[in-house]
View (spheres, rainbow, N blue to C red):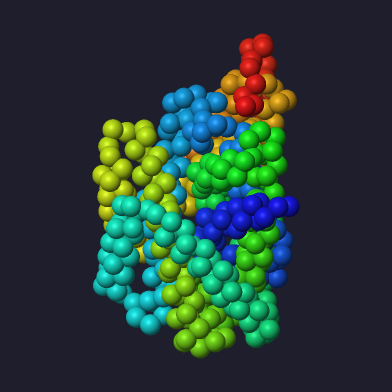
Length: 430
């Protein structure tokens, strides 16, 4: 494995390492208790494995994720890719980063709506100013911040293993009956698999700039870089999740940010909590800038608006949503991610399997259509809709009880598409 692959692997880790990576594993740890290791194994599959596959899938196309989704239909490609950018951008990803930064740096010392308002006002003003003319400054900050953040997380994790001797609690609710599959679905919430659809082209272009030209080399190099990223993410998830598991008996917590701040305070005092909060805030700042720039560039291509106008709109929307608070953002993001994640998973897997069906659009359409119908039901239920007329039918689907009712419909849809595909159909391999 050469130096470039390692460097790009660390770059990808920096892109992924944001708010979602920090707040969900500790919550999983508290909820899963004695079933922690089974739960975190499921979480790693969707929180690490799928993002790596998604980035690698982008190495099969010439441009970006829209080209991947265009294999279903150009209109689907535009809509789905737009939804992905809106989810990782102004609707959930960016506001979540800002509120995690607030909860880990300011809230341990003072809280309230006014404190959140002041913090987010300053935060988004700076994010907007830097996003107006993004330069290598953000990359350099990321290069310094990521190692520092990792050191802080390692210190916290080591402290968690050595200093926290609280017994594990019994798992609650879903983790008592199916910890692995509950962790699998919980991994959706990191948003990394859909973020990878946007970040993938950055990795591919980085390898192209370093002289990797053939598709075979690109796929292999991207996968190797992804493995480096994956090792780092698994280590972080496993460690901070364990901290959550060990803190379950110490009280109740609002969310993962609250858990980590409390853990830092318990082990290292108020200074430890403050240091971790400041580092996380800076990391969330650079993540927010990166997401606003990515969204601005994408929507500038698909609309007639200027880049500056778009990032202003995105910044204002993110600012307004961030002031609703982290718990509110999480509650609204869960149903949306429940809907779009299975679609992203099927799209990614079909990319790797396209050689089996010559990239037939009919297979893509059949699999995505039935997946979307099933996951739409799951998303509406998560929002609180009562769909009593179709619930008995949906409950008959295999794996429905563990949140994977879309799996068999996706397979059936793909097989139906296989029956109706046109012969011959060109391969999408470049």
